[in-house]
Length: 512
Image (tube, rainbow, N blue to C red; front, side, top):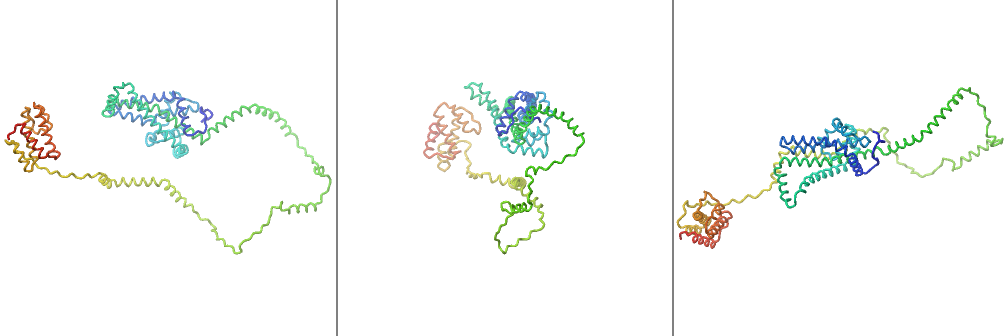
């Protein structure tokens, strides 16, 4: 990794500044990113939709294009990771790299890591660093722990942008519809898209999703790469290393002439030193002492000098020893005898490790255990829950019904028979007799043949053929009174019954 060739100005940034750095890299190298993106995704989009149309499941093509987004993310990541170090790849290099680069980590992102909220941050760690196992987990923890929330929020924002672009591409169609035809067009579009969408509507929805993904996904990958680059700069001090490298290069360029002069001087002094080494060693002359030249020939009294030294050392300011007097209790408590050998307590570390594990994962273990118990005892409590959650409606009261026993042939005097039934406490029988007689009279006057078991509605439609309007109104009144009595249990009053009977007898000329 040649840090001195980086095309970006490295410094410690905030998380959102790092996201902006990643999107700026995508904008700078847009042509190198979207050309191979289109060359890879367009043929796959056509092939998936053709295969899905053949099996009559066009929605499956859109699902596959969405699921394979981690595979497509390698294209912008490959481009910006090389372009950051001053080596922007060509379209051919990018396409060739997709055949051999990053397939092992990709299997994780197409299975159980597909819904990871920090996929944009972890994808550069897995594809660019090439570490595996415990080393990979450690790198994920070190680089991703501080900005995991920012990466998850970035994923949520990009998802919302994709949905907005997909809906906007669909709404773009309605901009070309005149305003007066817009309501009918909206209703027709709703019925096409929801009830029974044709194949071209399903392909259009897949196309809208692919367009939204093609616009947003490279920026999503670039923003995650910006977070990754900023975290490595903060942890590994790339900016400081680059500054030292530049300083070394600058000092090397300035010090080159001085190094040449020193080399020449060293070459000139080398023969002289060689001659000195070859000369025979001569005994050194003993030099005379210099103390008499300074102090003269005065003799020093050794006894007086020692006495002065002793007196100087007894000075409390120069003596390092001091005497302190303190009061202490006469009967001191005896100190407990300490054990001569310290006990080995290393076996308790295992309990500490187990306790720390339970404290960290105990709640999740408890939740998992409860879920497992509920699943194992599902057949015992699920039927009870279904029965308890269901609202028990009160049972309807049994309706007391009574069969209407009417003669197959109407009596000669229908009004008299109806009054007799009413007086005997059988009002429904009386109204049924009047309704049956009214239907036969209506059929004769309208000159229609009613089918057996004709309903009230069919009889009302047939009564419209009667030439007299008063006959039609009276028949409709009779039908309404019969329906209230038969279905709503609402019987007419005595006066209303007498008035209806008199009107029928007079209008239909029944025998008195």
